[in-house]
Image 1 (tube, rainbow, N blue to C red):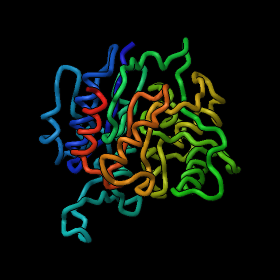
Image 2: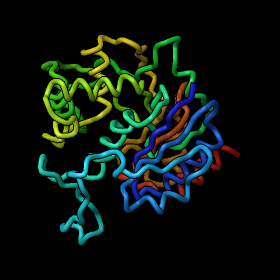
Image 3: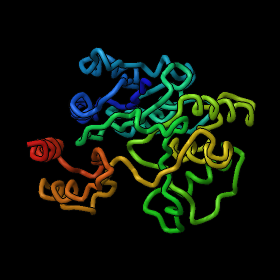
Image 4: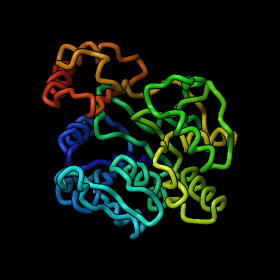
Length: 292
């Protein structure tokens, strides 16, 4: 069974994405193809990473014409905003989520294995093992969301209530967010169909009415609260050991060594969020040390 490995990225993360691709080519086993989803102005840059198993797809082939990128005047043009008639301006991380969801209507692979640009694979892994018979493993950490969170989980829960026509959510709530997660392509298509039928409009228009959304939360709650778990087998074992916050470890190679040393046996890679400030050269060197 072929897996679609899906990474939405942008120019500032290009070198991190290069490291991801190197580690993927070394560690990922089985039958897979890697889709790199980028903005039209980043296509030429990311073409350097294409190969027999890797393809660059422009968001212009995935998203509607009325959602377009413009220079952010607050950044002197260095960053982009995505504007539309139907929402406040969106940031790149919003649009990356839309690209991943939209891809489901354009591919034939049964599995979508979402991998962030800042992931590095450290252990061999075949994505086909995510299937348990006819059920796909769904990452779900039961009761992990409480009243006090260091991120916008509560807003994401409220958004998914409205988008999916469920809820209201109650606490503690389940968390579905990780940087290595698997989706069924047919379930993702069913999710988009459900949103369009419920709201009577394009799913993107419905989704971007608020800028506080998480595609992982939306997919997970759709599976559990609309489909009642159909086609999935929940697991609390996140495949990626993620460094989410800048105060978790010292911001040097020693901190990275400490972080990597805490990988659980079931985890196959690390994800050092680009905004936490660790130098990419340190990440690469720590990875090389581990492989030696």
